[in-house]
Image (tube, rainbow, N blue to C red; front, top):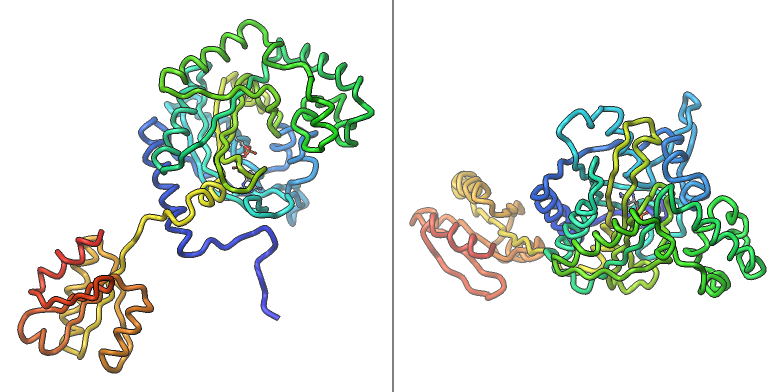
Length: 414
Ligand code: HAM
């Protein structure tokens, strides 16, 4: 029996990788324009990092982490997300003493979730984190950048939902209010929500069990319980978004699955055609995480987007990468071909050389199977006259032209 990939871990194949690279490159150039620098983070971290940042009573920590002991017996975890590792690196390398304030990263994350379309155990994120900015303008700037990315990629109809989770001043009072409300509904809550009601009552607002959705329908709203500075911050984020023509939907039930957030949180949904897997990006403010992990007080804002989900929306929209196949007939033509092909590649043309022996007819068939948009043929007769044949496979037209004209024709395909 042949061996297949582990369930929930995918190969990303040619045909899709072009789209992935297009997404990653578009993000790279856009984020650069906003002053972000790339950081490359390890795939494993000490387990403690995620316990202390994501929160011990979250789904991720309770049931989704790939945690194991290495050969030395140390507990390590495949990163389920990138924010905690970015913060760890920020503190470890004292980046707060440098000019670095904006970091972005891309790479695989690992969560032991039930695999289905749009939800995998290894999935890829592009994340961006802003350090040391308390201003609501920073929240708005990152959100605008994210929405610009969707726009540049031609993703229409992305919806931004925002909420505020308050701060150490106002959240405890809200938690208390919610706790009392939930206590009154205890009979209708699922086991999971009941278990977490004391430690993390907000999670009930995010529960997908129908009984819990019904029971929390009229739960007190966090947006109405914010202290004056949090309310002001929230209003300013909306104001700055408005300046760029973005009108977010306020969703006071959005609590997110990670405990490090303070104040602004958000999700961007778009039509992936997958119902609950339609959240393509999410994030928010985390003003206490750097200090909680041992660094100086540093307000932060960040987000991550799921590449698989974005790629699902953009299916079939990979930029076309035309292919030229080169066929040299005979030794002399092969020798000249070395020089010509090198020049075309220098000019950025994607050239595949067709190596099979035999007649031109068979070799043209192979060129077709190699996906040729153009086939360039150098035979002995052409060689003698200083020309070359260029066949446009789509138009089924062939022209015999001078050697340097060939580049002009095959460049036109780009
Ligand atoms: P998150 O909401 O857990 O946030 O994940 C962000 C995005 O990653 C989701 O919106 C989704 O598109 C994608 N994603 C998550 N899990 C899966 C999965 N199992 N399969 C496919 N895609 C998935 C974070 O990870 C935070 N670190 C975001 C952040 C950055 N907050 C502040 N800075």
